[in-house]
Length: 115
Image: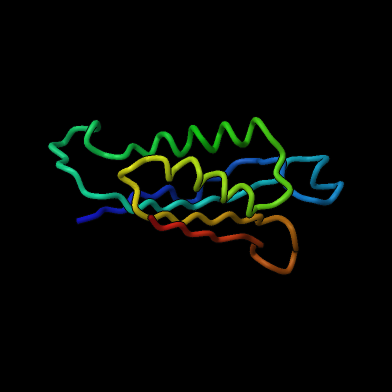
């Protein structure tokens, strides 16, 4: 049996983009992450589940420590971080830049990984 853990509509300013104006100022990103995890015995104990606090902590680290040219690179790095957990069997991450074009809701990237 599995369960899905998710982080929905995490929003923060990232240094991301290839254009000079994108490198000059941080941009708002919206990030969604879904993790499919092998079920364990829960026993109402946080030690028996994959805690989503680490997702926010890792995103905050990446956000503060580097510039990303591509959304794809950010997605790939988050997958690399998460897949080290042996309980994780699949993952999907999406990133969206909502403020790029006035005539669309957002531009983004979706990436999946499966063990």
